[in-house]
Length: 257
Image 1: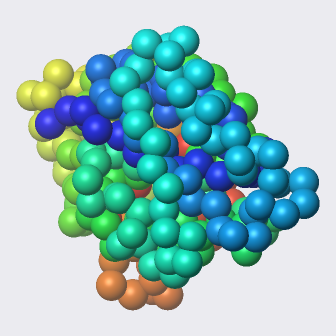
Image 2 (image 1 turned 180 degrees about the vertical axis):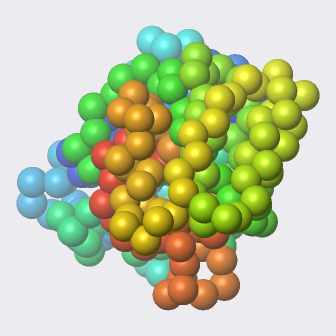
């Protein structure tokens, strides 16, 4: 698999420029076409958002031309309340920004959570106010679960371009941990070399606390993790990204559902 058709969701927020620059860099690295989808709600065209909301296509065309990236522009149904009219089915990878209270009512409500859990396409979610930087070091939040497995396989084209990859696993001291070695061996078959970071659950830290306290995350540029399963309220990090993580994080997250 490779990413040859990428969608970036565009809006009038101040996060839009960084999101577009990041999406162009990913598209260029993979030789992909980049489709910008305007997901502004009608209210985005009033007040201080208006100029940015009206300039999306021009900005996309100009930056894509300078980056030598093939591109197209689409406008989502402004009255859409769900994700089905946002073109997500027709892509290999989606790029969005985390939910931001400042954008409520100005961005179509399906972005990004409803699309993530419904469209069947992997997504990179960027932090609010994130500044673009090279994506070179990846951390995989791993457990032998369907969600984490899907995320890892969907991320392989991205992982092949990383300089450093760490597989982070969290479990009981008496639990079996050889599965992390099996994953690293499987990744090697795909040309991806990864090291491991095991944390034992002593009851002092949650899985998420241990992850962000780990040495692996100190230099991480992106986190690879599974998304929600059937019940969002019972989620732990390594069965799928929690809602807390989707709303509060500091590095981009590659997620699949």
